[in-house]
Image (cartoon, rainbow, N blue to C red; front, side):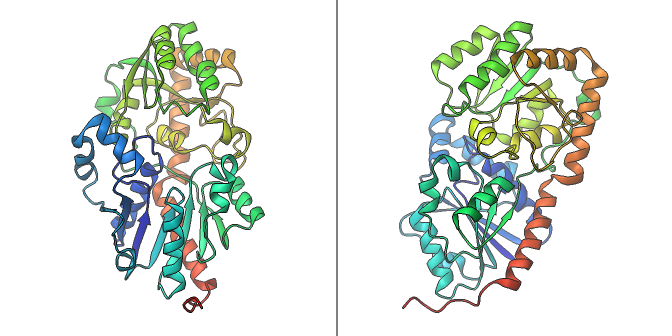
Length: 376
C-alpha cells in the first residue's frame, strides 16, 4: 500500500516529538514492503527553528540518519490532489493548517480513492478545544487518538466518525540498550533529562521533580532540550545541571547510555485532563534500558507495570528518595531497566503500532462509505 503522512515535520524534531513516532512507523511500513512518504510545510515552525538555531547541517543529516525515509515539502502552489493520486491511506496530523485539513477532506469527498485519517498527538482537544472543534473532519474516515481519554473527548464532542486509540511507541530499531562493551563504559554523569521547557505547562513540576532533587542530592546531570528561558538556565546551573541544548533524537540513545538514570516530568494537561497518556519519552527511555523515575501521572490504560517498569515519585521528597535508591542499588537499577525493556518489546514498539494501524485500516475499509459524489 501507499501511505501519505501529512506531518508538521518529519525532517525536524526541534520541539516536535511527533516526528519521533512517525519516523518509526514509516520505517516499519517500508521494511514491510509498503511505500510511505511524508509531506510537510516548507515554513513549519519546527523546521524553521532548527535551521535558525542549528544550521543546515541539522536538516541535511536527516537523510543520513534515516536513509529509507522520504519527506517532501509543500508551499502555497503545491498540488495536493496530484500528490494524493494513487495513495491508499492518507494520515493528516492535527498540526496541519485547518484550511489544508479541509482541502484534503474535499479531495476525499470528491472521489479520492484513499482512506483518510486524522491523527491527534497533542492536548489541544482540552487546552484549545476550539482549534480542534473547528477542524473540518466530516469527510475523514476515522481519527487516530493517542490515548483513550482523548478518544473519549472526540466521541463526546462528535468530532469525526470512527475514533480509535493509537498510542505512540518506541522505534526499537533506533532506541535500544547499548552494546555489551558500551554498557560497561564509564558513565559521564548520574542523571539525564531530555525534554523541552514546556511553555509554562510544567515549570513548577520541573523545579520540584528535577532541579531541587538534583541540587539536594549533589548528583551530576545533563539537560537536553529547547526553549529554556534565562531563569530556567540559571536554576539548572545553580543545581549543578549542565545544559546541553538541542539534541537530535537519533543521538538520544547514546545520551541515555552515558547516564545512570532518567526522569519523566509530564506536562500538566496530560496529568490533569488526559490521564493515561505518557507521551513518547518514557517509551524511548525504557526501550534504551535506562532506569526511569516519573513524576505522578495516572497510567489509566495499564500500559506499564508501575513500580516494576519504572518508579513513581509523588513529590520532591520522594524523588530524592527514589533517585538515591536507584543510584545506590545496582540490582534495583538493573531490575527496572530489564522490566521496562521487557514491556516495551512485548507491547510498545512501532512494529506493534503498525500492526494496529493496518488492523484499523482493514476495519475502517469494511465500514467506510462509498466515495461521496462531488459537492452540490
